Image (cartoon, rainbow, N blue to C red):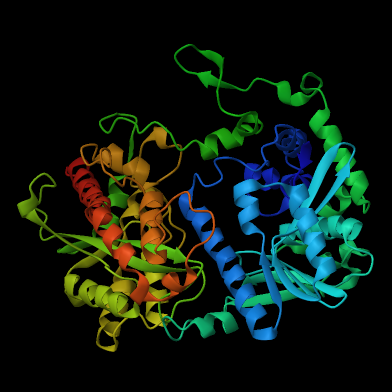
Length: 581
């Protein structure tokens, strides 16, 4: 049987594509830009892009992060059940291994009728409308007598519009199928507590008591859907919620069945009758005409999107006469570069589940760094004797190892007492350094030196961008092919084409983050969807497998980070050569 998924419904009501297409978080403003955008969300539903995909875990890190949070919910549910005398059922295996939503719904109903006190993970409810199956799966259901509580778990630190739509969908399905003698007493959202700071590594009770926070929504939520748009609603922390809800609530009819029928109509509408049969084209400079493109319709609706999101911009010829050079601006910025130059870069891991003392949920913890030290102006990027490379990569995610990283970093930067610290997009390095200082990751005797390094760091990117904080009026150097962008992924290969990430086992930041996450959480199977051993993730003494796997990728991670800073050396050499006379 065909299905209407929860994501279909949220897409119908919210239209996530609008914001992406217009580079804005304000949905109401986004939909005003171009009338054609009104078709984007319907196109996505029509193409069934929101169906559960076989490639759901193609992006292992993002999937892993959400799944570890989900596993924490199951771990919490099980422990809570044991402590408070509830029976416990987890239907997660049925979802991932068999996925028969009708059978899971029957199983849920049987449990609810048979057991007085019970907690269920992935409790399932199923209805049919006009030949389409509609399924609601609840992350955590608590039944006590004839009353139940419904909780949706979201790996987020705040309630978002789509979370409320999620609950609205869930409750409409549940209310049509729940046994008559049972009443929904409460429903809400389980989130990551952004005020939780880990005090003791490996303390399971600390996680159970403080890791989650719960927003309970009022019973009148179903009848007064606009409640969430008001200042008193539980989404008051969500920026722009009222503006967005003014639009969202205008799309839904307050009649769930009617909304589902509208979605079915979109899905079954003949493609040839719709605007999205349009074949997108791009301008081919050589042919002097528009030619069909394989890029999706969505990418081509608004011409500005082609310009903004085309990350495959031509790198340009570094010797081209069309490149823009401003000697005065170069000389002005160059005055800050006092040798030796310490060109440095961090890599980090973003932890939805903090495992290091002092860390919060979703805090980025620095896991490695690379430094290239240029001792004098007479250097050559092709002669390693004219500069020095220093690096560090942690071998364990613990406060002791993070202390060791920052101790060595300060020493490798010569305590910030010489020359000039240089980063690319210094806001990141300075921001993460500040977070680490505030989290207690830095030993006391190195705090002042690290703060000195942080405050004195200058930005190599300033030569290629107009930086508001520094009031840089014009760029010192720019290639027209960059279309105004100044990413190191463009500037690096342009200025130093021989310093490349090609042929590296780990060749981009996403891969580096993925392997650091696997190491931190002791999860090496990229196809793992659930069943993580939370105890081994929390307790560093149980991560032996992780240490063994880590050794296989250690050199690859070090090499990747080394290329980051070596490319900065190449860029600096190129700038000096171009502006020499």
